Image 1 (cartoon, rainbow, N blue to C red):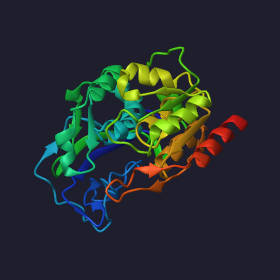
Image 2 (image 1 turned 120 degrees about the vertical axis):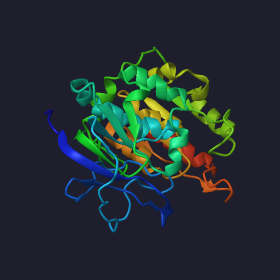
Image 3 (image 1 turned 90 degrees about the vertical axis):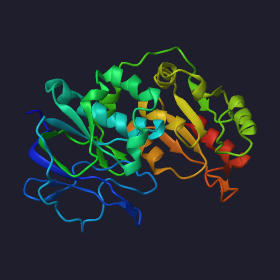
Length: 310
C-alpha cells in the first residue's frame, strides 16, 4: 500500500438530497457505522457541503453494494472555475494510486443533487482527463444510498477549507502543460465577458497597461495557452474570479492583484504558491449584481506600486 493511502473494506454513502440551513444532508460511514470525514472540502458552492450536519444517523444496510474496487477522489465540481481549483486537484492527488491500481474506478461525491446534470458537459473535463489518462467510464458518482466495497482513500490535497497541502503544488507542476515565451506581467480582463466584475474596466486596463502589464482576455485563448501563460509570468492581476485562480498553476508568479471582493479561495491559492496577494476591494454598486464592484483609482495605483516596490 502506498504511503498515506487508507483502505476501507466497505464505505456507505448517503448522497445529497436537499439543502437546509446551508447544508446538504449527506454522509459517509465505514462498515461499523462510524461517520467519516474522508477529505476536507476546499470550496463550497453557496455554502453547501457534501458532508452535512453531524446528527445524520448511519444508514441501514443498503440493498445495493458495489464490489468493483474504488479510489475515493473527494468532491466533483464540473464548472470550470471550481474544476481547476478542486476537481482537477483531486484527480492529480489520486494519480499515483490510480497508476498503481489502474483497474479501479474513481469514486466521487457531488456537492448537490443537481450537479449530476452538469457533469461531462465542458470541454475542459475531457481535456484534463486525456492529460491524466482517465476515461469517463472510470468515474463513478454517488447518486443513491449504496455500499462501495474495497475503497482506497489517498491522502487529501487539502488541509481544511480554502487551504491546500503544500505537497500538491509539485504534483500540479508535473502536469504536462506547454510553455510559451509570454509576457511577464499580465492583466486578465473580463471586459469582453458578459458578466463584468469591476465597473469601467477599460479605465482600469489602461492603468495596468501603463504599468507594463499586457492585457489578456483568457476566454479567447485555448486551454493550452491559458495554462502555458501561467508558467512564465511573474505578476498577475485582474478582477476576482475564475481567471485569477489559474495562478494555482503558476510556479513562477510572485504577485497577484485581485480586484473586487474578498476571496479566501484566492488567498489560499496564493498562500500555497508563495505569491504575494493584494486585494484592493471595491464598493458594491447593485444588490442584483453583488459581485460587481467599483474600485477606486487610488486603490488600484497603490496595489501596482506595492508590487513594484517588491
